[in-house]
Image 1: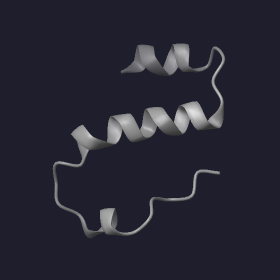
Image 2 (image 1 turned 90 degrees about the vertical axis):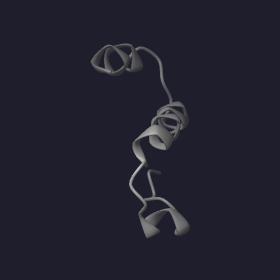
Image 3 (image 1 turned 180 degrees about the vertical axis):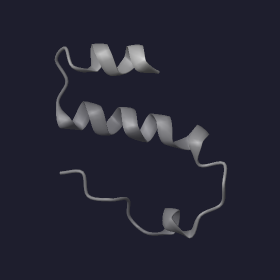
Length: 44
């Protein structure tokens, strides 16, 4: 995933980065956490 971080710096807006974070979240949230019932941390 490091290569993604490298080309992320090319021309990405905070919205694009947030979209990537959300896209990377589902596979990572395999562990049940009640945090997903509440809104995610404010990135903006």
